[in-house]
Length: 183
Image (tube, rainbow, N blue to C red; front, top):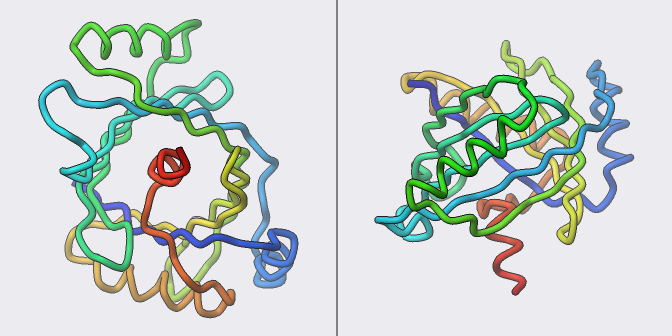
């Protein structure tokens, strides 16, 4: 099962970061709105187990995603299962209904505008997400998806790219955790 190796950084000036990325050869996508609805498990506390279950809606596309517990104290490395849902009308709402019928309850929603770029770095292709998160601010996420035997090299690659881009003070909490912490 693949692992998501990610670091997230608050960014005061996304335009300056975009310029650094483009100077390094990246092309940045047009923005897309993502709406993530997170659920609480009926039998265990995801806040305690450091897990997450969400349904993401992006345009006509929807995904159901499970994120396992973080594996270390510096990155957001964890197993992730991300399944695309059919693009039929109302599919996300039907899945929300299914989860609620099974006892899962919605706990929060994260809305963001996201632009993506890919950066060639240390023989890898790092995905960069430039996020404008409603009620939180602006962030960049650097991510690689790797197998278990590549975790440490992937973490080193992301740390090196973050340093090159002038990114500091990574944020391990999810956007949902940050939003709930404001309440």
